[in-house]
Length: 540
Picture 1 (spheres, rainbow, N blue to C red):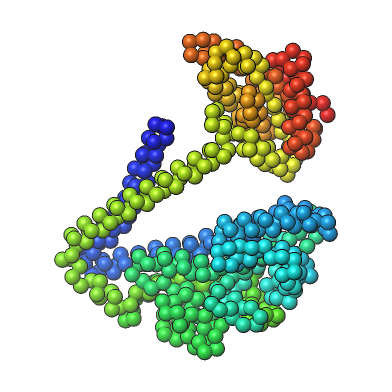
Picture 2: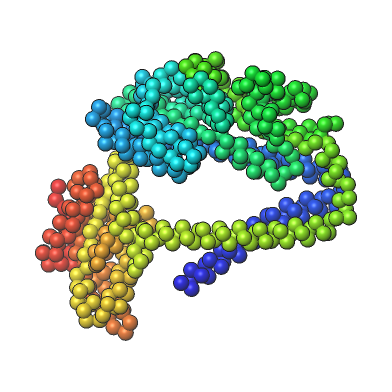
């Protein structure tokens, strides 16, 4: 407990200092720049700050897209999906498991309006809708035919690993723009079964307002007005909501960025990143390309059953992240700056210090709570090694990895010989200490990549994640027996135990976790009957 408190205090101080130093450096750098260079240097630093903010906003968009694409690729290779396809039409069980996994993903991410698997003819097989913070599995009678929608046809045409990204637009339901407005990006990829046959698509409807709100929040501390504009010059996000989505509303079709700033837009289009200062103010721009190599996009269709207008190449589909500081704001900020410098520095540092402390404290509390929950659920409280639940999970993961990469692993089932005698003669406290030291010796006998677990009482298991030969397993088994046969110092007394070990090997003894565990257990009992303190390999 003392070690935990000390560690938490150390983390608190480290987080606080890191956050405070970074925030204070930004504040001091900016304010000191204002002081030494007045208007000229103020403008220079403002330009730098705006470039950094725009790059961060660009990175935020790209990171969001990367996360969505990662989710999409995971779903396209989902084990339950592939097993359902293998067993069609008798894959109802796996379809249910798919739906549950979609539900958990929706609940955890809270950013997908819909998660769907659609078969090759356009029928939704599994769909989870996210409504008002409550994800729900759509029942069979609620599934629809999307065979005529542009995002289905465009995605189905793709090859393996290619990804379709729709335009960033407003969701259309029954031929009308959904109210309240729901910005949407659809990302899809084709699904292939284990025989490399295209069986449909997985598609995610990403709630674009999550991205737009994040951009707005990221720009709150910036003097600039954040905007996101598509390649046609229409606002996707603007300080004036009436300017947004002009390409979706006939009455707003003339509301485009270049209508207000024609010369600026021409320069912005000519460069990936640019900063422009003119009589209107300061403009800072960066380009985001949602469509990269192996991705495809189309111009979409506002018609519920319409086809794509055109297919777009990667350099034809882009967004412009723009920050705009009006000229009147520049002049206002410069006036009277020197007189207020000292007070401003003190106030900002105080706020930064308080905020940094609160943030650091909350980070430590959250991390400590998460670590405690994780350890409580997955680790044995006495020995601090994985418990049965975590052992079974690691066994399952090792099995999947071994199956995928065609390699072998071994499972050792260890029962302590003579432990009950030590417990009865020296007491339960001594027995607990003996179990702790046993776990430590077992960990010393194996590699870092291997797993030592206590699954109950005086029973331990070891997963040797990769093995080259049977000799390697036997060598480790002998090493464990020798280590546990060496007497233990328990208080002022010595305790002597042994170990009976049963060993099963994947794939020689089976391809199922339960079978491998049972065979290792059976082999352990054979070792006990043969005289204890020995190991036995499971027979094939």
